[in-house]
Amino acid sequence: MTRLHGSALRLTIFIGESDQWHHKPLFTEIVHRAHKAGLAGATVIRGYEGFGASSLIHTSRLLSLSEDLPIVVIIVDAEPRIRDFLPELDELVTEGLVVLDEVEVLRYTGREEPR
Image 1 (cartoon, one colour):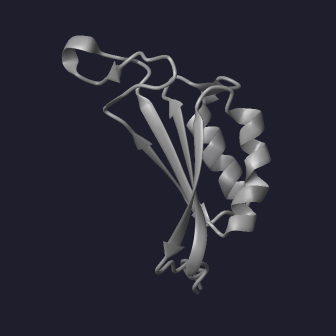
Image 2 (tube, one colour):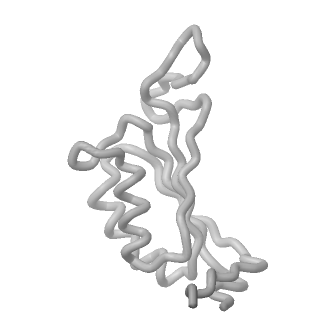
């Protein structure tokens, strides 16, 4: 079943690995809320190195181990569905960067229900 094709919105959330929501990783809460909201999908990517508003460089290199590596959560869905999800992020993301990009989805096929 094709769920998404054509114009869409990409929601990219840049946070830190140590960011928490009620004693669990913030990225986990974002993904679970996106799933509950029925969004098409979410991917969490752990960065090796980066910096943000604090200007501190966080890295996974052995000589300067960081416990707060960059985390990126990417969600792509139809624009109204993404925009309806933004109030969830207002509650969750107190420090980070949220980016919206218009994208074109060439193909997304949802998994069929098992028989």
